[in-house]
Image (tube, each protein chain N blue to C red):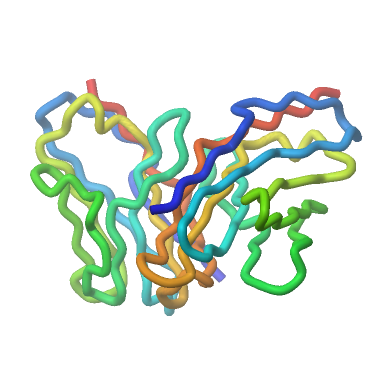
Length: 115
Length: 114
């Protein structure tokens, strides 16, 4: 079974530029998550989708971050414009369905450096 | 809201020695508890989780954890570590009801010395 795929693996941009990350979850997984992991910290949930609907985006900085999952499968996370403090690893995860009991499966992440 | 504190940011141990990684949590409601491992340049992988029942939970790679409700702790243990256990370990909690989202601790870096 293929795992969660993410691209690109690394990205370097200058502040005020825009960037997009892509995630393809495990086939059949209805729930998709985007996390931000700043160096030395644990992952922090940015947004959670159930199929193509948003379940939780309370910690997404909506003035600069946006995410979509139009067909309920793969997803894109965008930052526009980027700030220095956005430097982090962006992790995508998926689970069969939503709920606290569900195991989340994580992709390898996209490491973003904003200069 | 819940929070997780991992008491040690780094733990160095010798190969074949036992190890304990400490985790304490705070929550006003009942929670599920998780331990994830992150190997270098990889995503997180579930080691084990406590949902209900026996407070001693066994996971992959010989790890186990014990849920202690009175001390609000969920410490991770392994009786004999290997070089391959070198990684970052994250404790996480999720409310059983309500928001039900994973909240992670800041991680513990386990380094195994030969």
